[in-house]
Image 1 (cartoon, rainbow, N blue to C red):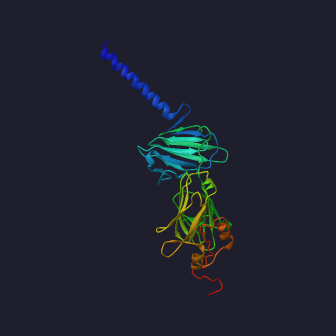
Image 2: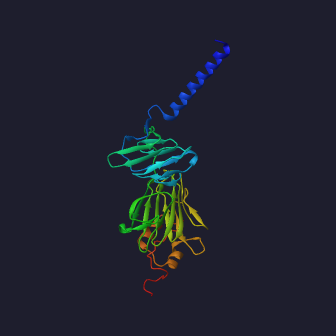
Image 3: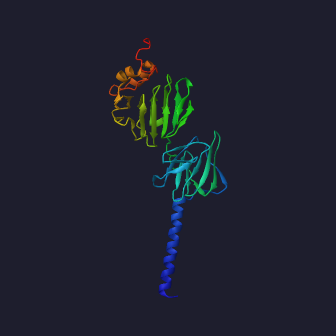
Length: 297
């Protein structure tokens, strides 16, 4: 065999070893492959997961195009288009979803299940120290009365990022994001909620009033209440941010906006004001239309 042939064979061997090592690094020595028409029981119960994608490109959840940071609930079907992979972050580890894959996840109190319809996914064990904290937005309404989320009636459950929330007359709502903080929505209000796993929470006030309150500094993100014309954020010295949208699009304090909107739920306003002297608390409207006095027709 000539020296040139030996060099070619040596190069091919080194390239093959390199490829094998690359595959090993990507999949990991303890990853479990789940292929078309296969089902895999996950190692621990879940309540939800969070999507991350290749280069922040969209994938499909239940037929809808979604961006990274979307919360995935039980029964959801995830589809990755060609050239776009995704990772579903769970408490029990990650599910790496290859491009061109369709799968369904089921979460129950005692078990969780992954079923691949086509393509391939890898189930990874939890990282050392536990899986990353997942931010889940949970809806609580006044006296369990229904409000509107993305056009549908709801009185509880999980709120996905990007949701539009509308409260009716006399009904307020609370959105608890765990370590990410709390969002209070006044009666007769419309907001758009966006959040990510770093605790960045953005609340656009379209009508009425909203208030955000950080619970701790466990996550690096800040909370923001904004309109098309104004914005207020939390920071290291400000744990609350909020207000009511005024006719000119600015954010007003509860004292002026309440009178214009008509009525205040004093108990909830007191909760919001406590400890927030530097920030204008959001008003909780009693929902009496444009009449500032309940006793005046």
